[in-house]
Length: 264
Image 1 (cartoon, rainbow, N blue to C red):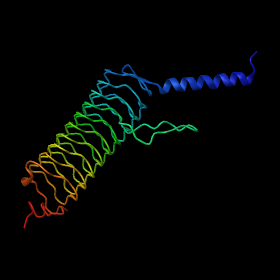
Image 2: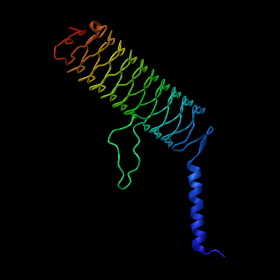
Image 3: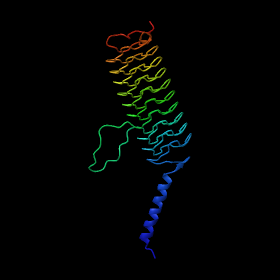
Image 4: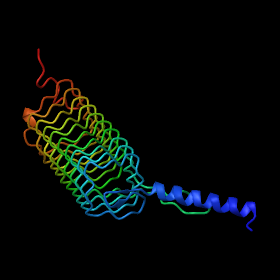
């Protein structure tokens, strides 16, 4: 006959195993857990709120309209994924830092994660999302909501952000070269020392944005709005359409924008 302590211990183990199984739920054929592989899975409109998907393989997954509010997508591979209309508000998309172990060495240099290269984020809700050091090269962010998003040090080259709302976003030290930013709302954004070489900023709203030390060479500024923008030390050589930019009250050492486009 089994002793009570042994039976009790086995009961606790069963409960733990059942709890673990419950946590690793399956949604449309995708096991929702870290390091999972759900490439090419159809997860459109799936409820993935607060899901643990760090280091997950989601390449070419269909996540259109999926609810990823607060999900852990650190180091997830989202290359070619379709997140059209997805809710990524508050999602963890920054560099994954493993729990520290005694005596373990950790790198001081953040990786480029998640890998969202080529991802379709059309209309995605990325408000307050932390995408620092993310690889968003050639991604589609048309009409995306990026208000207050953290894109520090991110790679956004050759991406399309047409008519996106990135007001109050942090783009410091990011690489946003040769990107389509026409009609993008970047008002009050922090764009300090950001590389925006060759980008199309025609019709973009940069009012009250801080562009200190940013590089905006060889791009297009036609009808861009720079009311009260800070452009101290900003490099703007070779900008097409610069004459049509509206810069009332902009802080510029040479005064090139002072008064331009302002009502008397």
